[in-house]
Length: 314
Ligand code: CP
Image (cartoon, rainbow, N blue to C red):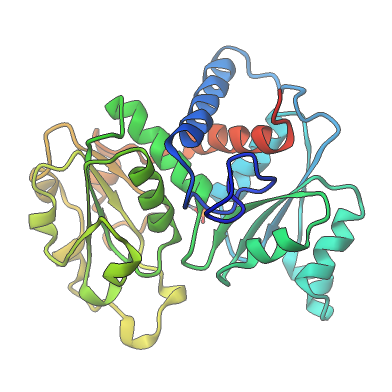
């Protein structure tokens, strides 16, 4: 796993999928799949991380990532602590670095970090004396375990990632999920990635080499194998970036639109979904949706990440 894009898999931290190669990604996905098989027949917690402590350090809201990291750590036998931002001494002026050092001095082994500011997990990784830092989403930069979750779900349903034709639609400019998905998909040899949304919500082309950009969702859907829908991230937008009232008409995934894709195309969404904004309910709940599979896979991917970082030789 990488600390920076140039560092190898066996780094102490998981900060981004950028620079991770196919072998490293596949090893993580395979380990997640092994945990899934194991827990299907035996739900008892493992002892792999017995005596270890994992701290959730979330400075932004989360349901899926925070809970699945907690479940993952517990299923590996670790103790978990949820840092209470609203009542913590960061409110009395303590810096993030001092907060990290303070909790690390309580013999904690891993920090799961979510923050609105790009680069915060990297900053803390540079400061950590012993603990592993796992990025649970920083600004619009990276969300590596969500990317792994998406890759595992795609690989499960399509038996491969190489050669697939994928469209990502929505607020890509503000999406750390899209960036991590793109890095992972490209490393595994995806055939084509089309990025679609209103022009002002698309990333700059030089930020996403190898991707096709466009604002016509109907055209972008033609014959794709997988569609990843994204939420409009109002919390990261300036007023002038608002999407207006006709967003769903142009970019909402409806059953009629879905028929433009291949008949066996799957629909992904990292969540939280906003029904009637970017996706119709009958599609979100329909037979081609794998949204809840993504949620379930998130636990096993996070188990794989924690086990690989904290017990690399197990
Ligand atoms: N996909 C995702 O990061 O969801 P949460 O914000 O609920 O963790």
